[in-house]
Image (cartoon, rainbow, N blue to C red; front, side, top):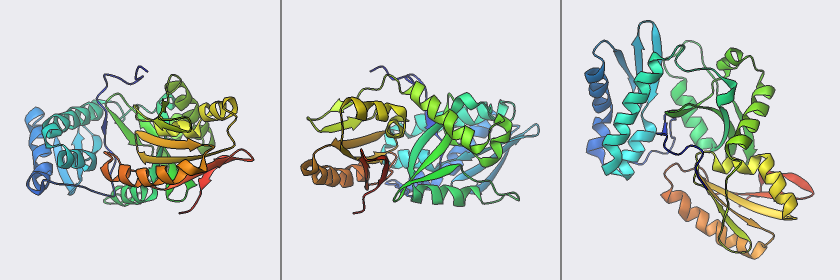
Length: 287
């Protein structure tokens, strides 16, 4: 299908708990590289290095937090893409700093994503540093080591929604979840499944694709296909694989999932979730 977000530079400024870096010399100098590029573009910036993966920017009374984890990981995995990703991060950061309030607090930008608990714990730890008033992520337990999380989708970045931003959107938490699920449904309306065989499907090609499993799209799919039981693995922020009505394929997908998560650009989890017709919600199936 045509990607509804095609042509958009998607620099995700989210902290990763599991950091992979195959080029120590580059990774050790990444923070300095980003700071140098920021100062070259705008010498009037106030820049503070708050940690190995955290840069605070300030200008004309406005502040913006830059997280380097995702770019650092891309640099480690794909060194040839490092310059481009670093430049995108710099451009995005300056644009966000110049936006009123740091970023537009619009309910239409809310989305739901699926993440692992290790990721959320690492991000929470990063966000808790250097702030007098702690800010919380807006998350819901999902299955085992997986959680659903609200994010704000901007043209240049996807970043976690903070609990203190709900008031700016005039939303309570329950309403924010409902709105985000609706937005996901609209964004993923044309998503196509990659049928690997009669009972195994792949899902990907878009940043929010795995969250299709939590939307009314899945409910419609399960009804139309008359599914009794399904297993799903969200091994990457952009990719998932699942099996329907075939227990014999479940173990094969579990083994594949373990391999896929090791190679994922944005790893999530190698644990399978299960969905049953008589208990229509995704839940942890254990190992």
